[in-house]
Length: 171
Image 1 (cartoon, one colour):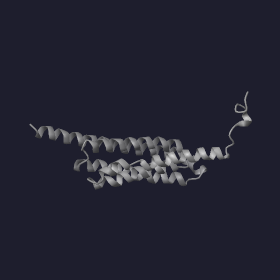
Image 2 (cartoon, rainbow, N blue to C red):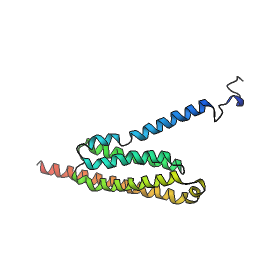
Image 3 (cartoon, one colour):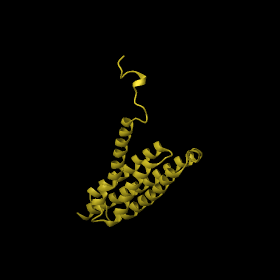
Image 4 (cartoon, rainbow, N blue to C red):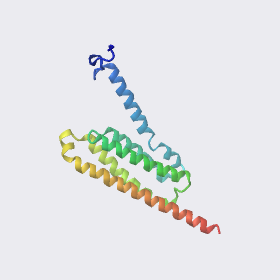
C-alpha cells in the first residue's frame, strides 16, 4: 500500500488543497447563479416586462445556493427555476412572448418573488429553527413549484391560442 492509499495520507479538511477545492466549487456555483436569467435579458430589449423575471431567476438561483437550511431541497428547486427559465427562453425564441403572455409571466414573477423571500429566510435561519420548520419549508417549495408550473401551463395555452389564431387568419 503506497503513501497515497493510507488513511493518514488523506486530505485534512482545513488543508490549503481542500480550501482551494471549496473555493473553485463555490466559484462554479456563483458563476452558474450569475448566468441564470441572463439569456432572458436579451429579450428584455424588445419586451421590458420580462426583465424583472430575468433578474428574479438569477436572484432565486443565487439565494437558493446561499440557503443554510434545506440545502438539497433548495438545490432541487433551482432545477425547477432553471426549467421555467428554459420555457420562457423557448417561448422568446419562438416569438411567442407577446401581450397574451404577460399575465402568465406575471404569475411566474409572483412565484419567483415568493421563492426569493423563502430562500432568504432559509439563509438566515439557525439550525434548530430550520429543523423545527423543515416540514413547512419543504411544503413551501412544493407550493412554489406548483405556482411556477401553473404559470408555465398558462403560458403554453396563451402561446397555443396565438398560434391557432394565426393559422385561422392565414386562410
